[in-house]
Structures are given as C-alpha cells and as structure tokens.
Length: 145
Image 1 (cartoon, rainbow, N blue to C red):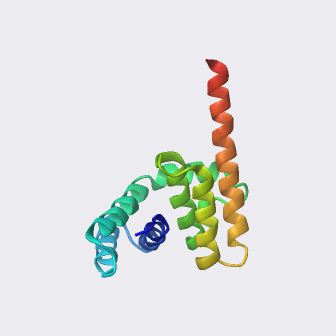
Image 2: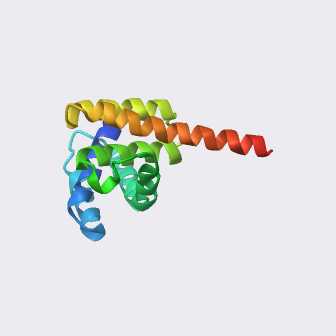
Image 3: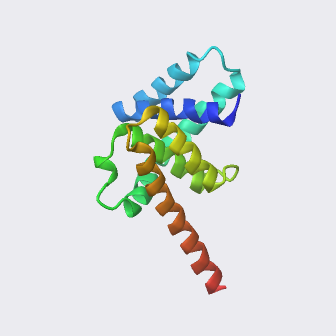
C-alpha cells in the first residue's frame, strides 16, 4: 500500500469527523477502515491510527490554520478543504517522515480530486503560509542561539 493510498483513506476517515462527536467518530472510523477489504491489516491499522492522531489534535491544528488563514477561519471553510488542511498540517508539524513540500503537494492533489475548482489554490496558499511561518520561527530560534 502506498503512502498516497494511506493518506487518501485517512482523509476519508477524517472527513466523517465533521458529522459526529468524538465517541461516534471512533466507531465510524473503525467501521470505515473495516470495510476496506483490499487493504492488509497493517494498512488498516495505520489509517485508523493516523486518523485518530489527527482527530486528537484538531483544536491545536485549527488554531495554527486560523493564524494564517486571513478572512477564512476554519469555521467558514468547506468541510473537504478543512479536512485536507488538517491532515496536511498534522503531517507538517508531527510526521517527521513527510517533508513539508510533500505534505503540501499531496494536499493539493487531494483537493483536485475531492474539492471544488478553487480548492487546490486555496489549500496551496494556506499551507504555504503555514510553512513560511514555521520557517520564520526556525530562523528566529537559530538567531537566538
């Protein structure tokens, strides 16, 4: 199973979060992953684990996105775009195996498939600002040393 497949299924599992509370989400995530017969057991576990890790950090991720999304706070964003942004932000900040550029590119690709016409550009702009802010923070930290 490729990373792209894991990411896409994680996106689909996370998208369900927009329609239920935490307890119900865990059940829905389990059901979704269980209904993927073409995936090996370790792939299913990885998808479920990643989805729940992102879900656990939603408030923090939304805060980071709100800081850079001028005029487009998370409560105003489309559910598809918000889910893609949350997943990408998680990868940028917490998944050391995924370079930021890869996370952005993959998010844009998901937006092309599942989002509207303007979604890829919107996703790219928000994540670009997020990474730029991260890079600037790193430079400030290095200057303090």
